Length: 198
Image (cartoon, rainbow, N blue to C red; front, side, top):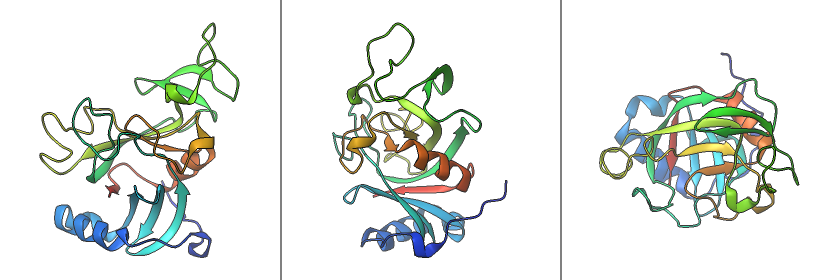
């Protein structure tokens, strides 16, 4: 896959977390700091695609209503250095509903049910839509291993049925993006690319 990042002049300003996040990435996975990487800025509720400290693109997100917390059952967004484990949904239509990382065959839109015969989907249902980028934690005891494992907790970057709430921490642990944004991001990243949540 060839990736062509957006024009850097189109990206917003990256706040103070970028230096801290890049330092952490260099400590945990030094080789991963050489190419493009993702920063989830929880305080700013934004996701940045960076090359070193240069922002290439950024998007509003929603992280967990429960805050930063990697513990199983916490409902929190796990901190620290991750890698994209799998890219799922490459050719799925926008709004495709995923369950257990598989497309259901249903395409969601505002006011539509989650699946045929079900009640209307609400923002509280935290639907997984359009594209799925799974996250594998790299920090033992922080986001990897028993009781705190991001992969075992099914933590993803994914599209959402709650686009009107982006910019507010309201997810159940994952990092939500607008459906058009997650489709764009999906085309710019590869499996193994680093993601730092801070």
